[in-house]
Length: 395
Ligand SMILES: *Cc1c(COP(=O)(O)O)cnc(C)c1O
Image (tube, rainbow, N blue to C red; front, side, top):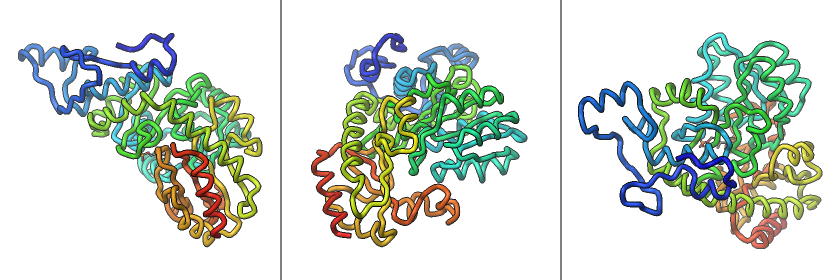
């Protein structure tokens, strides 16, 4: 049922992975079932010996609704297969734990989402995996770290919240020379702007909670990659340790994929407009957005991604006090910590998502007291801009 490779993304997003029951329903059916009945004892035995495509055993292993979501996202991303997970972190931790064992070495970029950092520093270390961190934007650090063998390279292609863009083609090449599998957390690049597979990434992980749902309803995640790894080590680990996505959430996510490109492109267009309008504002010391010429990796972002993303950050000159005054004055934009939602969201990373980070690491990563992360939604960009400018005036 996999779509032909010559379909365009918009067509895959609508029809990819579709399965129809004997009723020929138009909208994908939601199979809210844990298990599956077998016509005979012999067929149950046969299925446990070898499960064919579109045969299921138990929803922790797989489910027809989940399979549509997995096939659709794999086809969009351009990977052979995908395994859906309960959340973005179930996908990140599942992929890493499935691929690694005690004594292995990971090289990772330092600018990471807090929970990713926890898995690398606290969890993997406990089981004897050695993790070396590098400044992801400094190729010489990748070169030095990957001069010795490693089993996995882990990075966020665009980092949360510092929007560092990693040179995927070069890092993937170095990683492969060191014998490593490249695992990319691609949440900020989104499946719409991702070219990770073309640049050599082996495993691409998404928090589907973000743009794929896109309306802030459900948690979900997905691990995309070659069939040998997805249906090998990764499926084995995921199905036995319980990271499966709920069929209901998979149904929401598969429908999210249908409109993903339209939403993300509209959000990115507004983000570009807002970033350009805020750059140079008297209350702001710096605006960061991969789509601005002033972004340190602007050219790299243009060369390696099909678009700039939907998240920008800006640093308020007045520090935390200004940041809080600004946020409290917003009327359209909501204060929250999610991103990729249809609703525009302002976050103060230093006191929320990245609160636990030690002060020196916040400085290293550029998570300053005045830093605001703005996830641009689907409202009219003029209304958003008016709201942001009025809140800046309120400082
Ligand atoms: C949100 C996020 C995650 C975690 O996703 P959940 O669905 O919340 O578990 C992982 N990585 C990045 C970069 C994220 O932004």
